[in-house]
Length: 141
Figure 1 (spheres, rainbow, N blue to C red):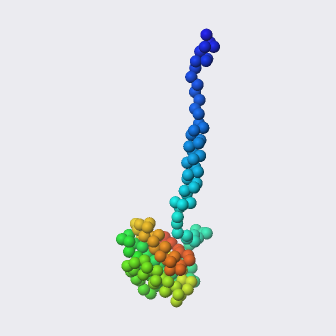
Figure 2: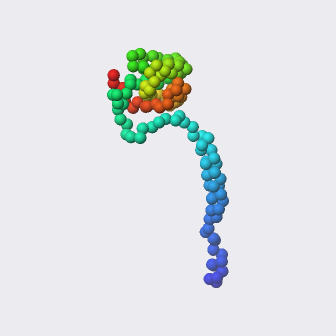
Figure 3: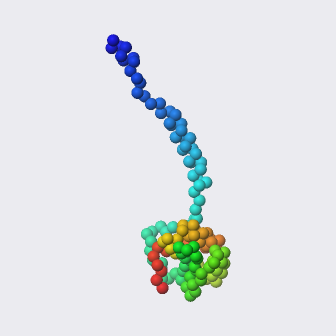
């Protein structure tokens, strides 16, 4: 009698091979698509904790994106509101031709859209700016 009971017991095993196959397929898909999905703007990040700009540096070009999607350029002695990013590109490019090596910083409103800041940085890249700093506190003049 005991032998018949042992043979009739249900087997409590789970076959995990199909789950492993599905996970491997998903892993291959994610590995193949991740480089295509991830795009970004190349920014030279500082290697140290944030520090104030050195007083020895030239007056920075401050490009601002506000919450309403407007763009501004502060060239030290003049504050210009630009209507299109192409205008901003030409202003910054002309300024850098007369004063090469001037630092460029982006000051984005805390509530500005991410897209407007990225578009601003892309316009600066087209203007020939190689390195962009990000302002985290208001600049005091």
